Image (cartoon, rainbow, N blue to C red; front, side, top):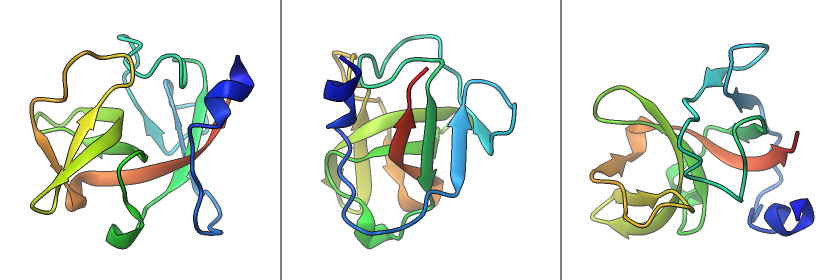
Length: 117
């Protein structure tokens, strides 16, 4: 099962992940709230995500990003569309898209590696 999940990440550039994201602050740059399993089975709450701050031209449909929400929360969801320089996002396990658009300035990281636990 875990090998199937790993195939969902597409790395085009050879950049070193320098941002660590987890559901606690233990040696992590960001801690995201993980209580809905919105990205299951791609990753689960105890998995550690690694990434980097992407350039805008590195973002595309299918990428998983960590971003600030309009209410200053942190989400980690997948880009499913791009509309007038804003990103449409959705959790892999969610039926509906997120009710807001994500601007480039709100993106903190592009996930390029998942450490499964």
